[in-house]
Image (cartoon, rainbow, N blue to C red; front, side):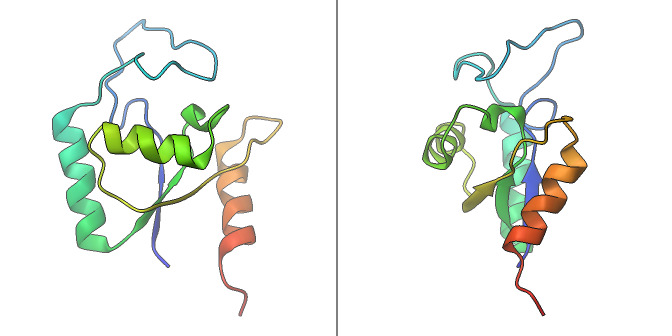
Length: 107
């Protein structure tokens, strides 16, 4: 299984210097995605055959179906198969490791 853990801010959504993002859940209309970044993401996902797991703070307060709809609206053409949990210490690495531990086949 190939997965890409996708953050939104600074990856497909431009971040302007000094811009402060509102606390989660971030409003859907807070930022508009970069067409070039979405195109690059779509190309990479198509080439690799990877699916998306959302690791962005945009996942907080949104269901998986809501995240899928938001990414579709932004033009991302990928299979979104999950979202990471929320670590109490806000450690993204722990959140990714927990998702992998819970979702990858055991050998």
